[in-house]
Amino acid sequence: MAYLKSKIFIIQIICLLFSHGALASGGEEFCQTYLEIQKTTHQKMSLKEGLKLTFFPSTIIHPVELKQENESSDSVIGEKYIFVHLPERKFDPQKIEEMKIREKELSKLDLFQKLKFIQDRESCLSLLIHHGDDFKKVEDYFDFYLKNQDQIEAYGEEKSLKVLRKKLKTFQRKGWGVYFVDHVSEMYQKLHASSKISDLFIIAHSDKFGRLYDAHKNTFPKGAFANLPKSLKRLVIYSCHSEKVLDFYKIKSNLHKYSVYYPQVEESFKSLFESKTPLVSIRSFKDISPKKSFISLNSIPRCELKITNDRKLNSIAVSLNDQFLGLINLSRGPGLDFDCDLLRPEKNQFKFFDMDQSARGSLGEWEAVLKNKQGERKKINLKEYLSWDQQKHLLTIGHEGEIYEKEMD
Image 1: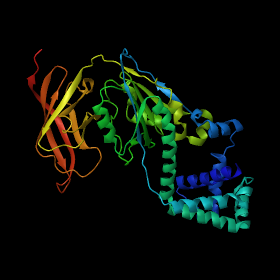
Image 2: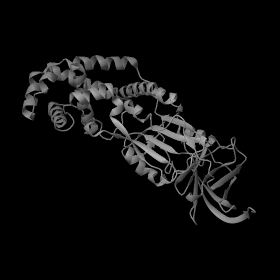
Image 3: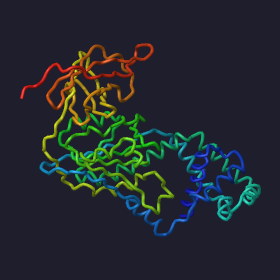
């Protein structure tokens, strides 16, 4: 337990140094960082909290539910999907082993044992002078850490994924399908192919602005949750900065369609995790949905966008008024349907783009047709934007034109 505490202490110093842009290049900087840790994050944890963190990590967070406003009647059993958008990165085992050896050596230094009793800058600097050899090892460790930071981060993510895979088995026993995907487009292709999904659980990294990322660091498009399958009853967002994610994607505006769940860290652990969400606590969400989740077959008006193109469009993404509609893949079908409420009475703008940011040439000549809930068909006037060398498709923008056909009742 003593080694564990010392190791956590060392990592806290490193994290704070990085957050301040420091490189631990001298005693002044080291002491300043250490004293800041004492004032802010280096707090004593009670025995009860320590036991909870070690043996009952799922109790660290709890699911917050935002209830669907007008829940529809139940009828048919639905499908439950978990999509994991976390990278599987490679690392050098020899570098990681060297890091562990260095950390073990640091945990035994007299310097760290005596630092516990230091309260001011002068005492800290005096201690470093009297333990010069120890501090040299600390500086060497910082230097090693900085040079191999990518390797160390990759190792940490690999360990987290290993733990996550084990914990997700509990969800699989409760009827969830689990999918580890590289690109966010893979998730939307799966959702587009399903007509009976009741529960959608997304595990992904996010930043402090609330933007979600897939395993290849592509951001989820704006309005990513505006046009999910009409059968959906529950959406779970499991990420850091979860409340920021809800705000950035305006998820609360969809509560007339489905309920929303997100993680919240228990108050006594907020000083430790802040706005981060530990993967080790994911089992706290295992009971949010029954083993058999039902969906409604009530008909909801849906509009439709169809395209015609001689070339096979491989998963081109479509948004309407900055609300994400989904993906079009001509090998699977000529278009997609969407919630008619996303259409404005006038001046609707469609955007067509490559979600995975790969190099795509001009899409050539093609047509798009909108069918609204009145059964009216309108041609979409398209304008393509290419890179400066005309070799890469950047974006196609479309505006609806005049009515040219109307379905008969």
